[in-house]
Image 1 (cartoon, rainbow, N blue to C red):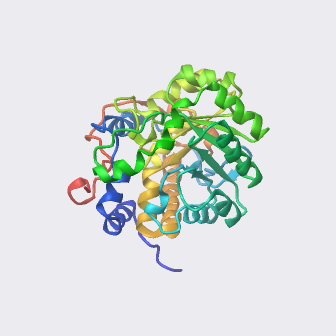
Image 2: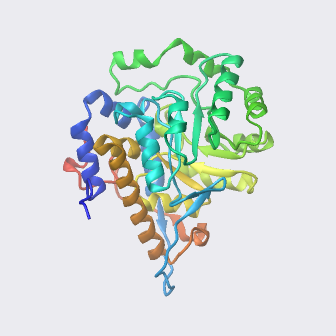
Length: 357
């Protein structure tokens, strides 16, 4: 059996730092303005503690689930990332290959390479397309029709990007590249846009990404949206919002099972993922962690990252006394005081100096 590309997540992050230049490192590690939203994502996870149960047979643990009927080996999906080709030369193809190899599902961003058609034919496994609006209604309809024709399994509309977050770690040249005129169309998204897309995709599952309040989750359900995707863009859009997992309980309560609920934002360890599942999430997305894995070793690195997360999830479930995801519930978590100051690497305390800049 060949030796894995890296043994631990700490090694993975160190490899990624060696492989990525400063601009690309800052692009994935940074966030908006004071980076408070990024830190709150981590702090909110750290403010939850487990309440383990004992004397239960946990010799066989099954962490598998499904995404709208498509089997997932673990409750992890690969969140959409614009410019994923920054971290691995084959971009969306490497993400797609890793998802197929491991048994996950990947979200392809509008603003990554290669094209949605090239990724669609790369492998037969299910995948999701994520829409950024970069044109008028006819532009949207044309893009959505391409997605339907390419037989994607679901469609996601990102709704938290009317303005580009003020990401001050990026140098001025990097910021200028991202503030393109076509972004102005993102400001025009309304519930009419949602209805128009739904009319085009028929019964294809439709998610809204960027929901951060129970009020908007309720509106989404009222508009027939099948997937509520809780996200603050990894803290890269509006600064000073709450940590994503803080919003999960109220959104679960409001949705009342009428839609599936997904979440991302600061999830880097198996314990993080189990906390979200216990509070009601159907699956958890990884973004920065995905980029670090790709930067460390392309598709192979991403598969290895998913293997490490699976191992952590299995151990966490076993130590909690749960053998299936259905046995995870809110009674297994409670509020607690954090013990570390949060930042993008604070879940990896054995990194040199505790943080890589």
